[in-house]
Amino acid sequence: MREQAPAVFPVFRSRFTVAVLARTYIGDGEYSIRELAAIAKTDTGTMTREVRRLEQAGVLRSRTVGRTKLVRANHEAPFYSPLRDLVVIVLGPAEVLGEELAGLAGVSAAAIFGSWAARVSGEAGPAPGDIDLLVVGQPDRDDLHDAVGRARSRLGREVNTVALSADRWVADDDPFLAEVRRRPMVALSGVPGPQDATR
Image 1 (spheres, rainbow, N blue to C red):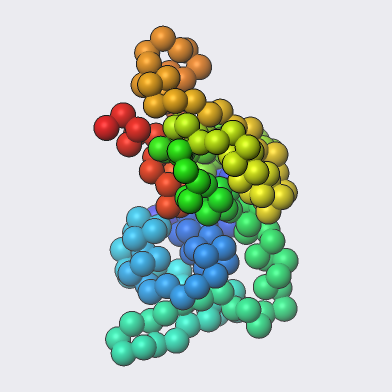
Image 2 (cartoon, rainbow, N blue to C red):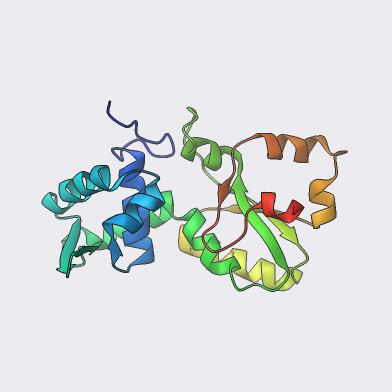
């Protein structure tokens, strides 16, 4: 059965395509088939077929070191720069926000919620325009504002931030937070998820 394209931007073929493009075009390093399969939550056979398809299209390049196939974005492709821009804007929020928040003192946990998270999780609906960011902890407000501002510039999207303490996050008396907890959330690369703030 063919994997459905995520509703966040249905032009991409499948969630496997999304995972590979996000990692290779945003991470901009070399990754093994096993690493990419783990990121996409699939097996190495499926990922090998996906990588082969993207290599044939000129989207990816690979080389073999010993028994390991290492995959990267094809920087020589004539469409590399515009495709990278598209990938960052459409698929990059979790990667970009993770990069900007990972080293920020006082951030206990963070995740994307709202319509972008819902579309990435497979819920049908209109394409999301902005990004809703939940930050748990007590970061310096100016530092958080600067980090989110950098992410906003890189993504070309508005980022709406909800920042609150760990105690407030686990409290049961806020209907808005109860709804956020109930709905899909997408973890940020390199940052603990909100579920870890309760431990």
